[in-house]
Image (cartoon, rainbow over all chains, first blue to last red; front, top):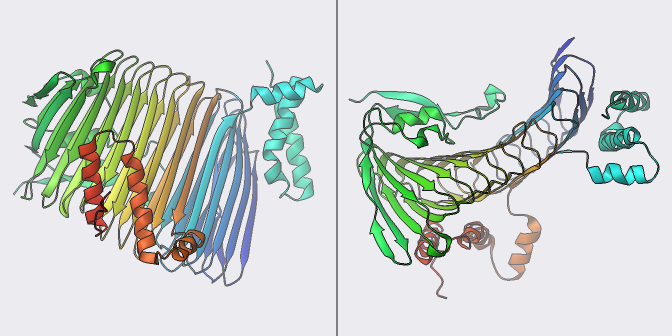
Length: 198
Length: 367
């Protein structure tokens, strides 16, 4: 299945748009909700998690345009790649000259579960006013052997330890999801992590 | 009238949305470059020697042709037949070998080019100090530095770029690093003209390391377009990229920074940080830091802070009797002065500080 998706929001004065996105299922995804903050004091928040498994190419992220004063945006994402899956985080933060007093923050973390998968981070920022505060942080890494060893020394199997670490990695995002989706997501991670050892 | 052709340089290794206009940059190039004014001197404990300049011959092939650079293959069009090249090599560690090079354009609206080829043999060390472009120059100056660093070698490249207000500087660097080789780049962008700068390093051998520290002060309608690429190919390779600078008036800056962990680069680590101080009402700051990863056992990170001087720092300085303008100049100066600690050569350090003081219209403080 191909998930080629366009979502756009225009946010007026004092308004807030909140995107919560979980990308797990499709074969190929291109999904980047866009928010245009055109009213004074408008806000945007994007929370996303992507789990790219075998045969999947999930290219996800968000776009935001700060076009009014005192606007703010926050993007927080987690990506997991496994079994040859490809996950790409792609974003853009545009701050126009009019958007004085803008605050924007982007945080993206990626976890690689094996060496046949791929994880890319492509965030762009275009700032056109001095009166803005924009921060960005990105991290990419794998499950630490020490953490797995610690959990195994407490009686967990290696498979459970790895699943527990992946669930913990996704926790910041999953707690933003509605309960039924969060339960589904945790089940999915457990299922995906089954048989991941050896 | 010479025909001008548009080429694309500083391309991102992984593209993003076209409407952001960050994927690459277009520059104009004419069919033939003239040799730039080039002088180079080699210094070591037992004396100094002037290095020869060799004109590029038709169809000439060298080992350096395989070295990819940050600006990309299309930038090869600047380095036509007849442009000058200087070659140098590393020395034994105790020799403390230094190559000092100056490349300048002309007062005419011409396209000029030059090149430095650095061959660091096994376990040798070399410091290269380059001064590119200068006040009052016009036209386009393209300068390329290509480095082949063999096992255990260490190359330190210090660049001071000062394009004239009507000049375009294309500063292109490429390096191939073998096992345990190190490349350390210190770049300072002052001057008044526009600069396109590319650095590409192929970390091929195990434990190869790239360290890049960049500082800039941009004013008026000045533009700085950067493309840094660190390709981690060998195991346990590391890179550390830092870019810090100040933008005033209507300056424009593009920073592309890519850490690419290729398959097989297990145990590699890469980090890049960027800090931009925005001081002008019409500044344009574009940043795109990429982390591309095809290997599990790696660690990559990126952090960027973009904005004006924070109120707490400003308040602290104001309580000490320093007004806003002085405080801003102080911070702008600090980001460049920090890099001066990386420059061992006193003469170059002095030159950087003098140029910086001139740019900030300040008196140099007597020590």
